[in-house]
Length: 234
Image 1 (cartoon, rainbow, N blue to C red):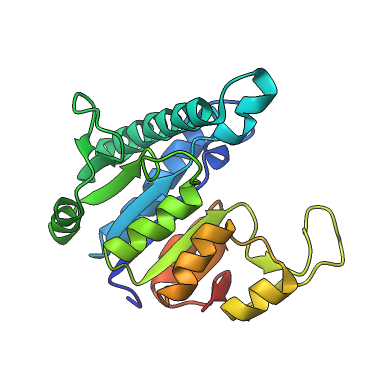
Image 2 (cartoon, one colour):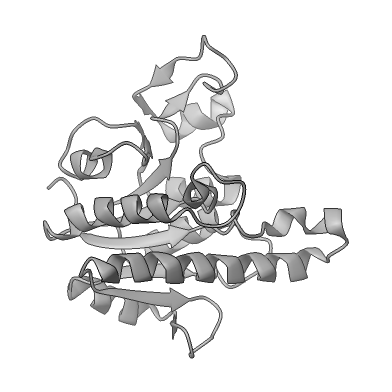
């Protein structure tokens, strides 16, 4: 395989499938199956998952909730998604550990870097919940930070589009897909790959990002085996 250790970033919205809210069991099962394929080949895999299918902290102001309180609610939503994904993976016989940036020892382990690395070395899938554990940071930032801490080879951002386009392909039929970009090109074109904090972390630490379609069967396996899937930012 092209990579030994990766961090997979999934959005909470992706778990909704065709629903308006919550977790679609079929989509959850699909993701678990795709993850199992690469883990069975010996890949060390960590996952950061968002919570937007349940609650987004950035929306807190609209309903009269303080932003800090709203961000903490969003962090709890990521733990719920992490528990769901953990259950789906273990149902397929994949050993997992859920580590949280906020201490809640009744449902998951606290995040400790050395412990996370040791779990990966033992072949367990590590799911990072509760973001960074701090308000005002997105799960994109958590993905970049955790990837750097565990010395991942790459951040794979699983989305519902097959890469980065010159414009939003769902709105502009003339948008063109780009196979590879430098960090500077992304900045110059003002392309929304990740939030700026997350993107800068990857840039400063030389950590490549690949944006790809997670919903297409076998894309994850093909990507880690070295096929040109999605768009590479390096």
